[in-house]
Amino acid sequence: MSADPWITLGGAVGFLVAVSLTYKFIEPNQGRDWKVHAIYWVAAICAVVFIPTSVARYMFSSLTVTLVGAVYPIYRATKAVCTPEEADDKEWLQFWMLGGVLFMLTTWVDDVIKADKADTIWLGILTFTFFWLYFPLTCGAYLVYTHITEPFIGPKVKPLQRKMNNFITYIYQTLANAVHLYLLWIIFMFLPAGLKRIVTIAVGTVYPFVCSVTAAATEEIEDDTYWLTYWAVYGCLFLIMDVLETWIGWVPGFYSVIIFSTVYLMLPMFRGADKVFRKILVPLAGLQELLMLRDSIQIKKQMLRDLDPERAKVVRKSIAKFFDNDDDDADPAVLKEEFMASWSSSVKIPKMSMPSISNPFSSKGGGGGEPTEATNLV
Image 1 (cartoon, helix red, strand yellow):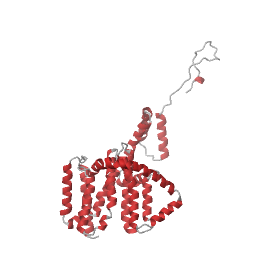
Image 2: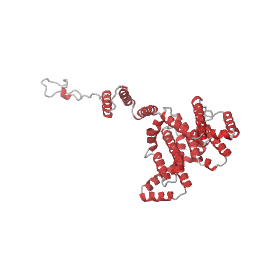
Image 3: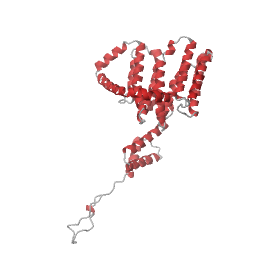
Image 4: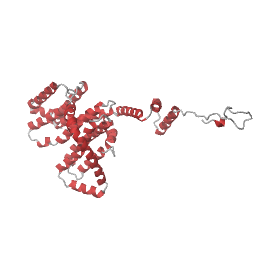
């Protein structure tokens, strides 16, 4: 490999390291100080315009944009879903509503720009824009959501979501007919490659964007988590599509596979995003333990919500006793038997007894004698 790709890789990774360090050590302030925004953009524009092109092309490359605008947000979104803290779910959902869609809609611009200087400026502005959206001192995604998306777009999107839900229901019914599905596929196959790409991206972004805006406006965290999980997984799918279409995009059915994969990830009836997230993305990020901790917290919240306090207390104690045991036997049948034994010992069935009655066959006169064993109901 020549020196240029290695230098480009080093520049992109260096920029990513700087981004991750600032996000780790700087406390977010929700972008309240507008002076910080002014300083940020002055510094960004000066860096993009005045750094020599021979140097800037290694700093602001397509790889840098991908790492800063997609790869790092995918990791942060994955970690947000796994952490017990729920506020970061909404924070990164706000980013994906804007930054994720922006990244997916601008990947083609770099291929159109021919001049090196213009291309470097465009990639530099795009890189700093993505960073501005989640930089702890600017929190651009939060500001855009608070001042634009929530007050202006949100009210218009909610009725649109209901219409789209009805439309999707109609699509379910249509696709149930194999003839209709085949006709739609034939029409799609004859579209130009550029239009196929647009349709594919639209399928993966329009409806999820509408649902994400609605989810972010509610107090419930479950819908935020659902759509943040989708964006993290779909971001990976989009990166795979973006890489493979250069080599096999001409193969018939390539975009059809991407669309079917997107529908599988998106629709609640499949919950594909959650399955891929837990089976692939979380293990790759090394966050299995963190996700288990969050799941346990969610189980406790569900118990407190669905059970009365006494029953919830019994269930919690039984589960705690089960997990507190040190055993090396991983056989599910054995574990289940131990848990049920623990559960049975924790649940005490109250004794019930019949009221005392006189024994008509007793030789003693009068009633009110002690009941025999046969009259006790245990």
